[in-house]
Image 1 (tube, rainbow, N blue to C red):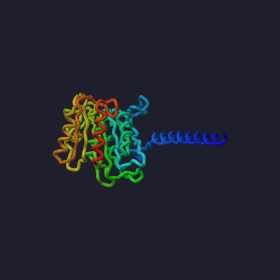
Image 2 (tube, helix red, strand yellow; image 1 turned 90 degrees about the vertical axis):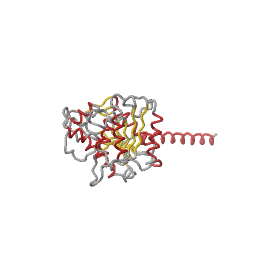
Image 3 (cartoon, rainbow, N blue to C red; image 1 turned 45 degrees about the vertical axis):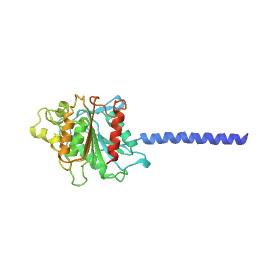
Image 4 (spheres, rainbow, N blue to C red; image 1 turned 135 degrees about the vertical axis):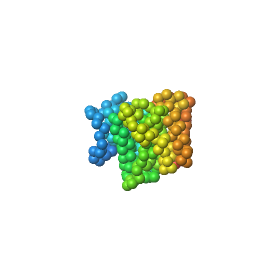
Length: 298
């Protein structure tokens, strides 16, 4: 009787320990580090006032004036040494932080890839502000590569819609002095690329102002800025996207190929714009399998 009780007690204790360990492990995975992007105030202000506006329990955020990086690290035994800085979209007016941010980071972690969600400042017609934040994000991750157990030569950038414009901008407007801000690869989802005729009007106005100069239009039309040093890229978009027309991606892909830059592009028949990493998207399985294979080849 006593022996049976002791055995039963030990089994219960082991079960309790197992459950507590599971809860603790989940808590560790879900607890993420949020880093202030700049140690001191950035040199240029976007002149936005008031607090950030957070909607739907953090699914979206606007009026961003304080940029941050939210760090998602994979489990130690699955780490590949790769890292990706994620730029959610939102027309340079806000950020779709959930389906173009946290969902992406968690998927990357399952692939053994460290993820850093960039909450970049809204330009408010100050054209260089998002770019300076993205460049700083790449520099920060590269400078802290050892700390995060990643390779300094395997740091990519991922962007959606206007965030795709930002990702393609930092891929074509980078600095190599000091800690390089050049990403090693780019992942672009239904990106705004051009600031010319075939563009997303809201993104262009929010970035360049109501009456942008021809010089600014040309400079921030990233299909015009591709050269032999532009990093490899993979692009995903929908054929029926009416918000950011496929011509943006087609022009960027063509420019990459003209410069002999490795690239891949997948155009899905339907989906429109803004599907992100919602698993309800019709081609979610195909898209993630293609991305996984491309990343493994890096």
